[in-house]
Image 1: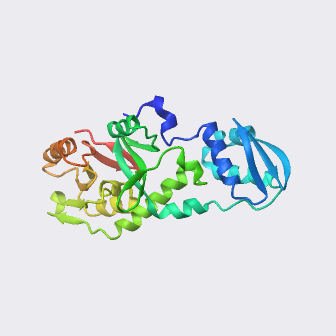
Image 2: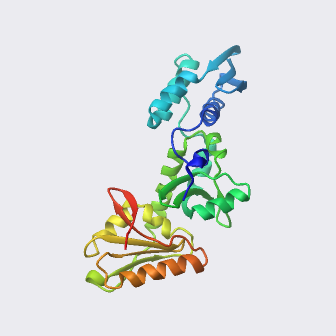
Image 3: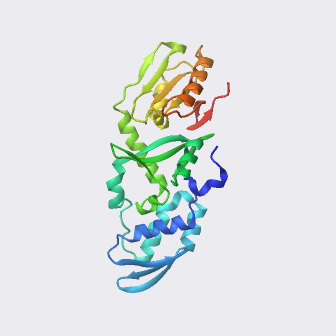
Length: 275
């Protein structure tokens, strides 16, 4: 399970004061009339139209902490104050615009996250269910690069916007994938099986599991045994126990093994299916 002690290594609001300051700095740098000359903690030393100015971020950070969903509006308001009413920079920096098409979500377990951490990678992780979480990757075609915590503020966006972009990219990619179906009624088995590492991640798309729910009799159950495979079937499937056992075995033994448990989606939240 993703440890509560690792909050700074997960994408759980509110972000730390250090990350907030880094994000504000990244948003200020593109402005032609502002130069960031340095800073420490929640204090930034600026030069605004050639004049030295000190920016204190404590009040803006406190406002954000009170309502984490207002992060970008709070920063925009702060920048407007610093620039004396000028229009804030675009929410999407040139750097993020360049990287955005390559951004995708990838599922991983806590064990896989710890292995990356031991390699020195500090990944952005959004927990989903038990020890299953969603990381962000940059898909460069010939290689996959994990997005690290320190990189997000340099893009001039917050993690929520990065996740939203990744899911939009996954949605577009999913439109090219046709679900394979076997059987009918309570015995129907729906399958996405692709070698791109994103098959299981398509469980994150409401369009996917809602479409699948409409095709099964009773409650939809999802299996994500490997990153390359997503299965959907009814909780009333006569081979439910066998399908569960196969998912556990594949997660433990197959390349790209992922999650051994069956999942249900209720009110948009993933839950472990108790057998």
